[in-house]
Length: 322
Image 1 (tube, one colour):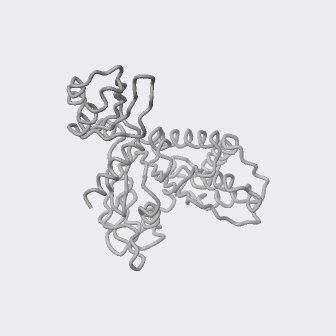
Image 2 (cartoon, helix red, strand yellow; image 1 turned 180 degrees about the vertical axis):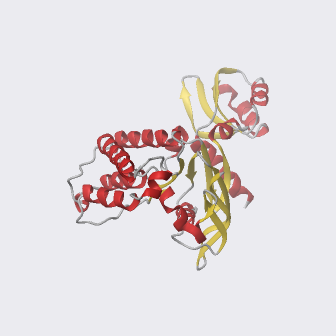
Image 3 (tube, helix red, strand yellow; image 1 turned 90 degrees about the horizontal axis):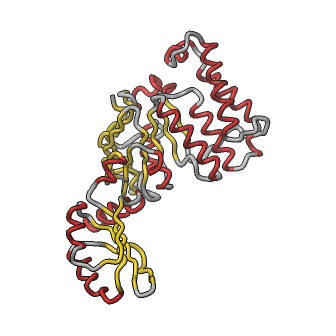
């Protein structure tokens, strides 16, 4: 079954584009990274998915259920953390947790989560809640209005996950968090995913997506540029090549780069009588190795590009086709 589906979804705000015929399918159990520049349509897509806005056309589904028509049917199976967490300012964190638990405590939800009773389900939520309070360094006695941006986001994370949803949707969850807390949050997400939770993570931090997600979708101007498993994306015919070469061969190197469509990344770095230059190359490893026989190299290093390099490659490739 598909965990999340966007079928030809279009949403405009007057003349301003939100998403434009967006198509995306995320399999159940995936840990999906949703990346793109500001204004690409990530937040609009998430809001349409959760029935917070109504698309102009197309449909969105979670676990096979059309969320525009039957959102109530699967509300308790969803967890959502917005990019900005705003809650009752005068409530303590503990009171917010207690109120959140009460929203899910019924026999039907207990059965869905594999518990024999409502009491057992509540005990499980409290146990997970306490674990996250310790790991994320949360003070339950503080009022929400006294919390920093980072601490507000921690609370939002706990509220969205403590009922162990089948599908979890997070919009920029780690912005404003210090690196240690970011690391703990990602460890928790990996744990949840290993237990079967489908996760959709919208993020500007490409290293975060690269290091933790199973698949990634690149969005630009409201449309998907690419959606593949992280492993497949990195195996594609795009390599990063570090070349160390004598300065006297720079003219030959320039001819080689034009011949093989090698794009220079960054500036030339001086190493005495040698220089080091990094290129991205859209060929398979055999073609790259064969091409290097034309050069007299001091050293070479060929490796898979970072997600950031891949994203910029596909993004600029699309721009050149516009």
